[in-house]
Image (cartoon, rainbow, N blue to C red; front, side, top):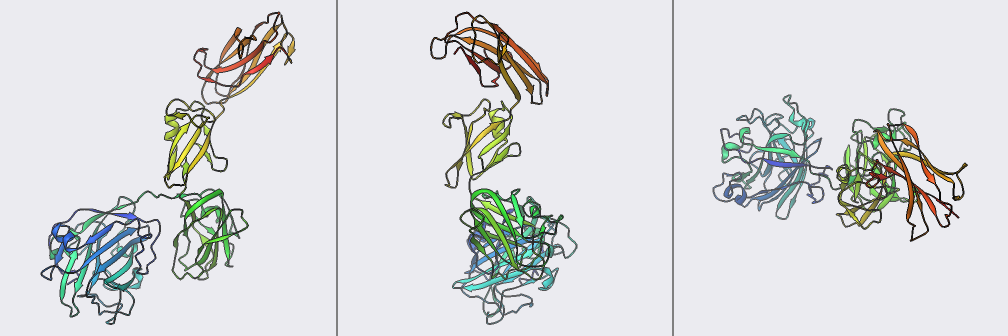
Length: 568
């Protein structure tokens, strides 16, 4: 009865979300928490399916002893299923390739275009079991009932499972191409919807039905009715890790230049790839991250689906290497592999040792960190010098913050002293941007470097002497400045020449003169201002200031350090 022979209208239950995974799980029947961490647990029990109206218990009269937890995740290759079932009596006498009917089973029913058509015209119904054969010694197997009508290897479906002390566990993979047998055309992206139903069947050793739990519909008519399937929405959670290899310096043992340079392995584009110069092995890629990072993950996407044997090593100096990924005994086919790693390294090296005879290739070699990471599409982030540059002088603080993005961190802006918090106003050169790690890895401090909007050259003249060494009493003091407006807008500049006596800490202003000019973008111009010096100037000093705008009491900015000339 599990093969979908019940038809008819039924009540559809609420939509569900399936999250994208950053790494395909290894299909071995061991449902590890790490590889399924992005999946929500789908509880299957009498209480959940019947008492809460979240599906059905079909057949068997009273409660079945069956309970289970199912998980679903997806990536660009297909849909992954994990099931952990508690069942006091496991029954499956069928072998590989046999139709699976009247046996303990996990069933996934799919309506790939979410048409919600009554009946099975748009349905794919996959059965998965953890073992095969009457003695349960055979490998896990699968069967599709309506479109493939078999366990055809061309579908690319995979399953692995095992019996446990109180039931069984299995993991399975359904490629998206296996759902295109009837010419369906689709590409799974975040936000796409698909019809789906999950079911666990429970039978006695004599083949008698004990009960079938479904997470859809409200009766036995729902099993073969695509209109009753739940709507699943494919989603993508924000990754906590950040890629630190993209756009860095990378070298290779060889490459089939120029169409397959090593840079193509770290460009973030899966349509490009690095290819070695020939079929010789081993071949390697080495990326310089610019500084040492605390590494969290390695993602490797090969061009071919070989069961690649390879290693990944890390180094602080590019000479002494530590193996952080050892796949020298790998038998699992690619093209995609993911590994959790630990340790702080600047250089990371991928060495391909053996495949099926294909040339060494890499579509993407991604190195991740869980450190606090700062990125921006508007400014230049230098993680070696710890600077944020390319910031316009006078940029509003709110605007500046809006152009920054952080991973694993929060951030705050401080004055150049590193202690005075800045929440509004305008950016100043030398301000400190502090990232506080949300992963307990401490703080990271960047220095803000604002763009120079002007080129300014100031000088003094006393009497007829240009660039004098000291002031001279009774002579004409002239301050001169040449400016170039480097910004993309017109700017008004004021030059002020001031004379200070010997009183107080920095002297009292006794005379001043100023001149103002507006310069167009790219324009160069000069300003002069001055006055006659007193006869007695012992202890006096003169200063030239350059300010933005024309308001001496409220300048828009101080554009240069003061030029100073003393009397001694």
